[in-house]
Image (tube, rainbow, N blue to C red; front, side):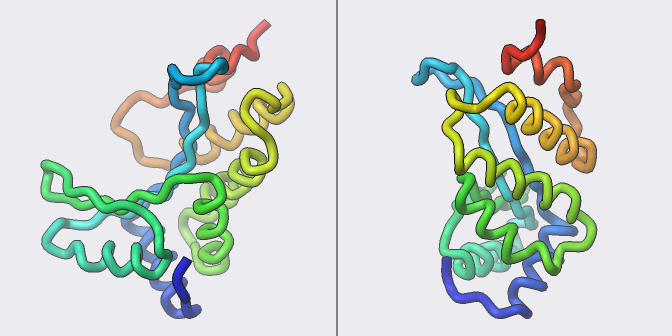
Length: 159
């Protein structure tokens, strides 16, 4: 990641609090035995007319990809357990409104960095479900949110 001052980190944390989202998703995967994977994402949103801010954030962290959406918005997405965990570690002292989500996503990334998916114990998988629910409960989502039992079923943790 690029060099960052405390002022830059505080600004970016404020931007995330207002115009960002934190996500931990379970995605289907056809190229593995497990058939699933976790995906950690930090996403910043901005009107495309003011997209330079997102380019600057990308430059500060030295990671992520920008995409212009059809609705006039631009997104900066940062994926990857280690990258997301590193960024959250640097932003957490400054995050105010999304602190619970950031702490949950950081903990999930720490678990997923240390253990490959197929080696995750049932206890760790259940903890990851709990962390998804913390993040999800604080997010504004237009689609229906999955329940705890739906996540447990997806992960094969139901009796």
